[in-house]
Amino acid sequence: MVNPFKDMRFRIARPSEPITVEDYRRRARRKLPDMVWPFLDGGAEDEMTLRGNRSAFEKWALRTKVLAGHPGASTAVTVAGEQLAFPVFTSPTGTTGLLHWEGERAAAIGAERAGTRAVISTAASWTPEEIADATEHRHFFQLYPWANPDHGGRALTTAFLRRARAAGYRALWVTVDAPAVGNRDGERRRGMGAPPTLSVRQMLSGAAHPRWSYHFLTKNRITPRMLAQEARADGAVGAVRMQGSLMRPDLNWDDFRWIRDQWDLPLIIKGVLSAEDAVRSVELGADGVMVSNHGGRQLDGAQASLDALPAVVDALHGRVPVYLDGGIRRGTDVIKALALGADAVGVGRAYIYGLVANGAEGVRHVLDIIRAEMVQALLLMGVGDVAELDRSWLTPASTSSAATPVLSS
Image (tube, rainbow, N blue to C red; front, side, top):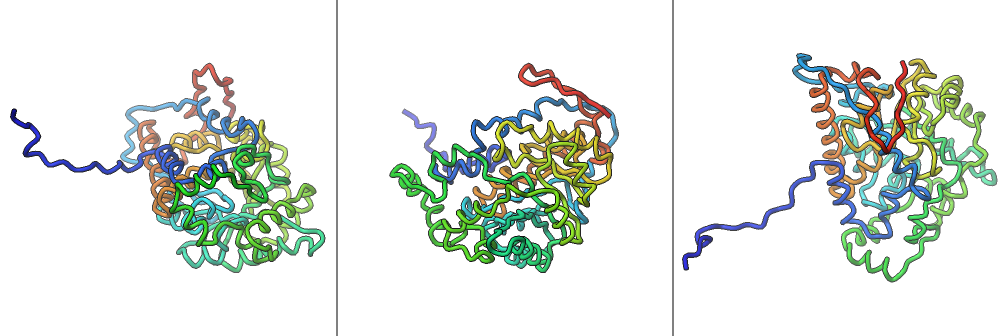
């Protein structure tokens, strides 16, 4: 019998490069132990808000105008004085080194390579100085206004602000939706408490991910580094416990006013879902408002970020920029947020999927994917510049699973 394959050369096909954020999500899942995955991908309690952040985008359909004659689509915007190639930045995420040891440093490097910037968390696994030394451009800093009444009150917040300013950060995101830790059942079930608890199954899962385990044990990037330095926390468990004790259930508008007085550069309040809170924050000196529910990780059952956006935009009447995070996975998600009034959006989980899969280059590629999707969609819609986007480019989608949204001017 003649062998038809005799003269053929075979090679083992290499896995294709990810082409969507969801592709990166699947890769990230394979790289992380079971114990750690809920810290990245989970939310609070029944995860209604986590799911709502995604389903909110399904309520809107994009309108199109044919024969628009645009040879390309302009996406450049300015955020807090920094020119971005497109209206997407990385939102602050704490203790990201637990997921990939290069953490926030790689996030900032990847964001730069994609033409945008990162917002660096107070709880980052790298200090503001380390990240500034590793990057070429000015990034943004996020503040948790933690304080310990028994040890200096606001001294800790003052130290954070001083270090961020000295390291060259020129805009401040103040997170106000975390007076306590959200009830994250998925993390607790996997032993991600304070202190963490290990089962045989979890240890076996760690052993099945030797690269992650090696970096976990050798790189020492699993704690909020600046907090550990300033508060002299003892080890990773000590830092996590201290972080919880420093949260501010008593935080109020007087504290926000005080922070405004300490920082004379652009200040954005993050974690606003109501028009009333947005207006008050601007009256007290906020230079911008970020509509956010902390990625569904705090209050389960809270309004989806995109659903809350129009009322905030309408109440502010263009007095300050409005940003949004929560659920962004596609370029079309960005377009819908901009059409509803956001000036730019932040991505959190999306960039971390890329980080876990391939470090700084994974972050860069995820952002490039979102930008490419966005440009292609704008061209298909007949939009020549993101500045053209408003609510006239949206129409309620015909979906039986979501309430019909209402457009207003």
